[in-house]
Image (cartoon, rainbow, N blue to C red; front, side, top):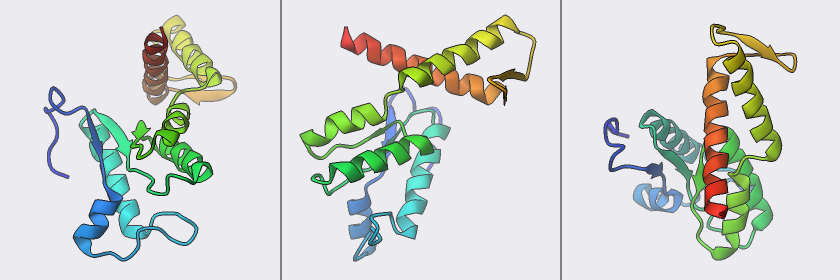
Length: 159
């Protein structure tokens, strides 16, 4: 992937191109019959995800070329978000609302994130705490901040 550290003033995100990659290597398919990526594409997708986060920029999942299959788009967007991607490229206007919804935190996620931040604010010297019967620590603070920041950005755009 190269060294992207220190470029965040000029680099705001990384993505990958499944169709471009296939053409570059001479692949005849990039999807399995169940519409999951084939193994080489899974590897490149993961490298993009980890490279983007290492560079501290947005990790944008590649386009879903079958723009008419909106059910599958929802599924792949949900999976991409679970994996750590922050967005997905749209190839058709019908995809935009599904992508936006999938990559926006739910009210429940925002409430939980705020609760994580509150419990650590109330216990500033603690390294590990519990919330709702589960252990939470620094990675949970990082994720909670990410969710609250994203929710605030979305709220600003709606005003």
